[in-house]
Amino acid sequence: MTQQQGLDRRAFVRELVARCPDALVVTGLGSSTWDVFAAGDRPENFYLWGAMGGAAAIGLGLAIAQPQRSVLVVTGDGEQLMGLGMLATIAAQQPANLTLVVLDNGHYAETGMQRSHTSLGTNLAAVARACGIAHAAEIRELQEVDALAQRVHARQGCSFAQVRIAAADLPKVLPARDGVYLKNRFRAALGLPPF
Image (tube, rainbow, N blue to C red; front, side):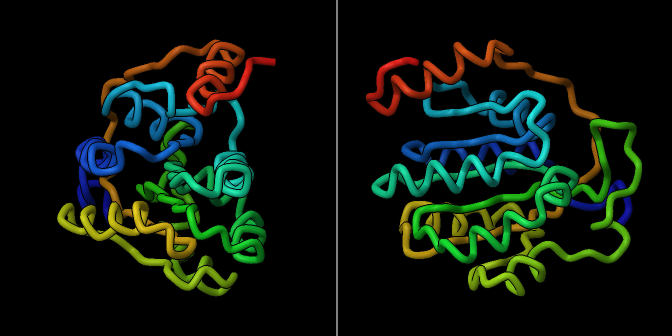
């Protein structure tokens, strides 16, 4: 896959978030955070700053703690490669309300656009299936966002989507970087007190 191939990541994220207004959203480091924020900030979005590799783990903990809510993790291929072992842990837990979406441009965008393992043959959807996540798919068309959003709403099994996006340098749209503020805002959205 070349840099020019793939979906417009911001358009895909905008469509997905719009179709999942009730989901709790956890974002990975960098582009996924900017894309979710650009789609519309809300207290139910939990943006990670400087926690590379941690989005899937936080999403798993949140899905277990909030089983009545849909949890949507939006992260990148570089971050998911760093947290590859979490796929096995997620599969072992099988939270029915967790959907993990990996925006895969085949590059480490945050460190200089070096090629990532996904451009060198690693298929993250196949890895997720091998770990035991039965519903793991590759997405290459924008219209596939509808079926993905339906899975988020259904909460009928853990899901994984590897979304093939173009390696584009889009303008940064940055949410607040205050971790305490973001944590407390998210807790308040869940009806929990700050701490």
